Image (cartoon, rainbow, N blue to C red; front, side, top):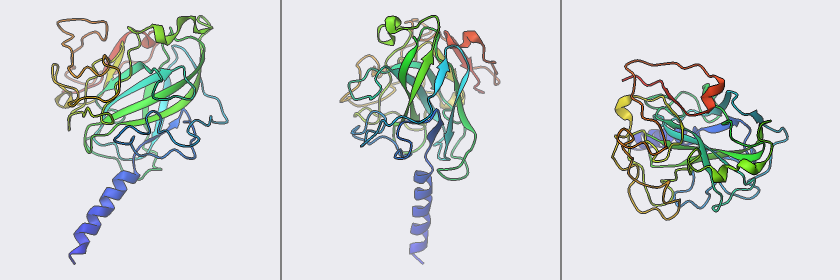
Length: 288
């Protein structure tokens, strides 16, 4: 009889662990060997869940035209109360710890789903979890690695990361002459935490120190990290010092070119995608 509560708790934990999210579209690298666990707490498998044969490309190429609305789709059920995510690009097709990742969109709150806990089902469940995004107009044509990173709001302090190879079609920029590496203001460095000694706060949707010019909020206002509060605590063992700045700047007082200030609306606001949505934009869908 004493074993039953323990077994019930163990089953619940296993269900949550086995139900973590994984991207379905675009198809990630080495899909057959990719699991849905978070990155190792010591960062040993950063980036892209490094492992043997981690960067086998899918048979079908994923091509994105700039300034066209796209959808990233996920399967799984353990959404950990949402959190905050970033989409980033690198020009490396076999990324390593030396790769430079540039953020093309940040989701502060309600990512990848605006829920208080988790969803029904298991790791293979399709709960219609998706993120809308567009490749910005000043990304040149060529091959890139697209990364989704997620910092969950509820549960262990973790960082999730899936990577997929993509091809960008931009007729107006047909070469790497406008490399993303040289466009620091438009495309800041990826935020890294929970795997490098700097830990994000529990039960809060973090706000990124360097979110970039395209930011979307979908969570509840009461869950968002207050301005001026540390986004992570501890000394990071790796990660760029600018992207890892632990203090959120007060962008109402000082516009640093990172994001235009915006306030949360009293009720959800829906903004339809448009060709201009891939430029500097800030989408608020958060109720108070």
